[in-house]
Image 1 (cartoon, rainbow, N blue to C red):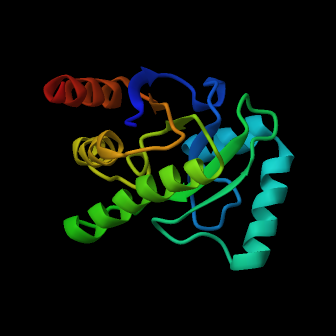
Image 2 (image 1 turned 120 degrees about the horizontal axis):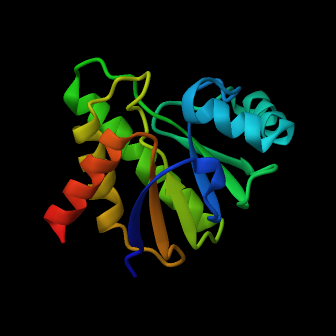
Amino acid sequence: MKPKIQITKGDSTKIEVDAIVNAANSSLLGGGGVDGVIHKVGGKQILEECILIRNRQGGCKTGNAVYTTAGNLPSKYIIHTVGPIWNGDVEKCTQALSNCYKNSLALAESLGAKSISFPNISTGVYRFPKELAAKIALEITTQWESSTLEKIIFVCFDDENEQIYQKLINQNS
């Protein structure tokens, strides 16, 4: 089945889904943007679990995904994925961002999640062009065949991202 796709502007930490995707950095120790907010609101349990993951595997590579429980957040899991830092290499950056979505979706399914939310991965301080990032995100998620996922929500942090996603969704419907 293909999951239903929704676009909303808001705060990822307030969305009630089974799995919240966190645009993490490779250290998994929290940072700015969505990552910092998730760690702050979710509480120390998320950081403690991230430290255990780091100790076991040495962090998380770009394009990969790992999970923790959600701490104080209204979900079951946090899926931490590391997006690419935009450097102008369209092919390499596109592949890495595609992997963030694919690996997060596959991990959510392995956890039995029925719903997942994504931020606008890499479009903040990592400077990935917003329209290209949205096209990649929507291409991966609209083609995704799922055995468990019923709903995918893109939680946009600003008006510009929300408008880009809405425009692309409307063009493809």
